[in-house]
Image: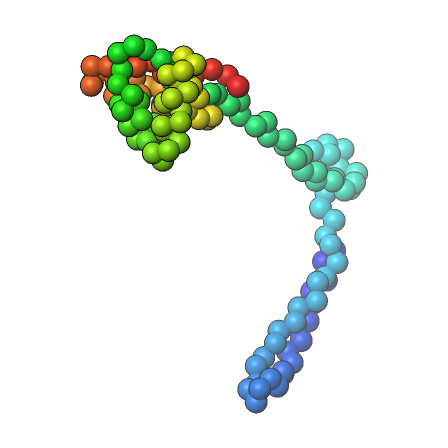
Length: 138
């Protein structure tokens, strides 16, 4: 059974100003019968909260593949535009692609990686370059 509590009103003199402070004592916790308890014996149910563990999403590497026709400057432009690389980073990645045949542009979740691959391929086709961009699970 819940008991009503009385409210205390006190005065607090701070810096010459009077302010009213309302203090409400916390009353006893009410016993709430378990609604799933079919026999109505008055037992109290316990509410539990299950903490869910979230799995980190899988990451995917976005890779550029070397070809003999796409200009190096175009590859640098793609890296700057779609992967937000500065000029020096873009040049380093482009040289790596040129020398090793493949270079990593970034690591993203599946949806972001898929979008970046599509954007790069579409942009290359619009400019009539055979640049290839793929993604692989990390």
